[in-house]
Image (cartoon, rainbow, N blue to C red; front, side):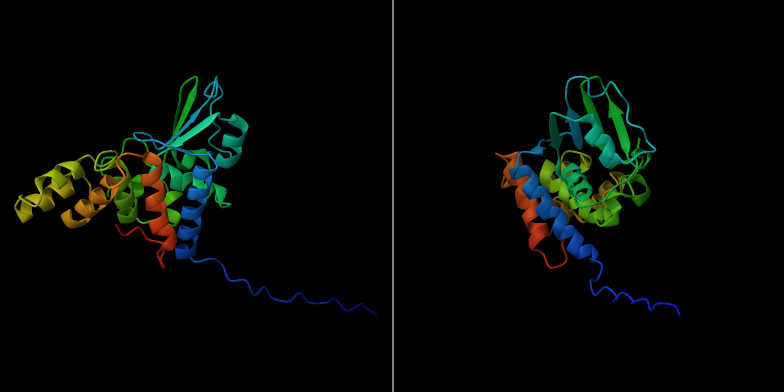
Length: 223
C-alpha cells in the first residue's frame, strides 16, 4: 500500500506588480545611497572604480551581478538611471552583460542602460531590456532630465527648457522628435525645474527623485 503524500498548500503570495517593484527599487536606491554603497554623480550611468578593475573584462554570458561582485569595485558612481539599474540588481533582478552596454579601462568599468550608439533614444529597442522590465521610456526620460537638469542623454531638453515656450508648437514638436524625446515640452520643463530645486547636491536630487517614485501609488516619477 502506497503511503499517502501530503499535497503542499498553494502559495497565497501573489507576484509583485510592476508598480510595487518600482517602489521597492526606488527605496533600495535610497538605502544604498545612505549606506554609501552608491555615490550619486553626473555624466555617467554606472562607473565602477578600483585599481586594475578593468584589467579582466566582463564575460557577457555570465550574470552581471556575479561579475560586479567578482570585480570588487572600490567605488560605484551612478546617475539616476544607473541607480535604478543597481537597485534592480539588488532586488534579485539580474541580466547578462550582453544585454547592456559595457566599456572598461584599467581602473574603471562603465555600464549603461542605453545600448551601443543608439540613433534615437525614444525607441525602446535602444534601451536595455533589463531596465525596461519595470520602467517605460517616457519615465526613464523624465527621471534622466530631472537628475541631469536637462543635459545628460537628452541634451535637446535643455534647449527647449531655456526657450520658455517661445517656440512655435510645430517647431517644439519637431525639436522633440529630432532629439528622440517622447515627452511634451511641458513635461520636459517640469522635470528640469524639479531637478533645479536640488542643484546644489547630486545626492539630495537623486534621493528626491527616488522618494517621488517610492511614494507614488503606481511607482511613477511625477515632477
